[in-house]
Length: 174
Image 1 (spheres, one colour):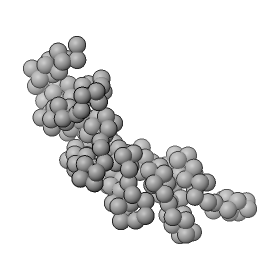
Image 2 (image 1 turned 180 degrees about the horizontal axis):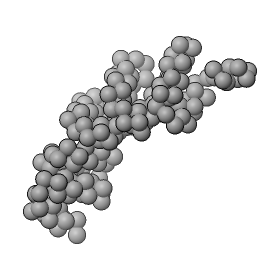
Image 3 (image 1 turned 180 degrees about the vertical axis):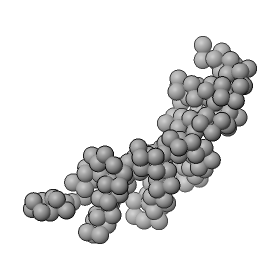
């Protein structure tokens, strides 16, 4: 609205940049909805920026909802879309939702990255689901695991006092 008052007509690029720059998820969502009202079709970048704002604001339900909206609209979600939504779930300890999103990625033909797996492992760690964390870690492709992967899995084992599993992981990374 402020842009229009100053004679600047927002377009897709300006609106997407404004979403990325917004520090609050409410503002990002408002800009996205404004784009839709003004007959701009948001693209995957616009949606991803909004989902990332939801992640930062710990709004996992909104992140998943927007991901579903993408599936039903013109901008199909990509790996970045899923990673941001999984991270939103991770930040709030919603491990079941994080795992569902990871499996859905595979179901729609997207290959999870180390970021996808690390966020899901971390969500399992926050939910004290050490078995799931280990399953994810061992299911990762060779070369995709990193210190973050192992650290989150070790932390999941530690939270559940599964010391022998934590020690085994330490042996593997040495």
